[in-house]
Each structure stands twice: as C-alpha cells, then as structure tokens.
Image (cartoon, rainbow, N blue to C red; front, side):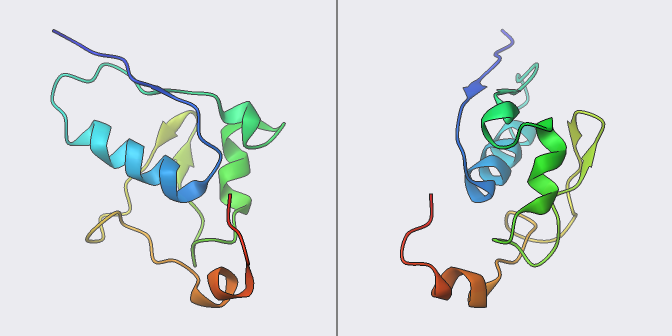
Length: 87
C-alpha cells in the first residue's frame, strides 16, 4: 500500500531528514510539504538557508539527493554556534 506522508516543518534539517526517510521507504508515493511556510517563494526558499554549507538541491518540486553519506549535507558550524535558538 502506498503512503503519502504530510510534512509541515520549518527547518532545513527536518526537511532533508524527512526527504531522505521517504527515499528509503519503498512504498512512499509522495512527500507532501508546506513549503510556503518556509518561504513565500516556495521550495526554492530552501536554497537560502544558512544551516548547511551548501544549498539544498531542488529540481522543480523534486528533492535532489546529494549522494554524500548520512543526510547528504554538512551543517555550517559557525552559523549553528552563533544562534541561541534554531527553529
């Protein structure tokens, strides 16, 4: 049976983790995400995050895996340490 998880999170780390989980689950049809909460310009707003050292790759409305180990993205330690609270 196919599933379509609904994902409504604000942070880039949560977004990448959920996308990777869905890619590893064989019966996922689609990941429904409210990207407008992230940015008024839609999913391309994920490219403007400062949490990761490189932008999250989106092709149209499709997440493009980086091919690197783990979640595929390395976080920007200077940005994370400079924040008291990350949403």
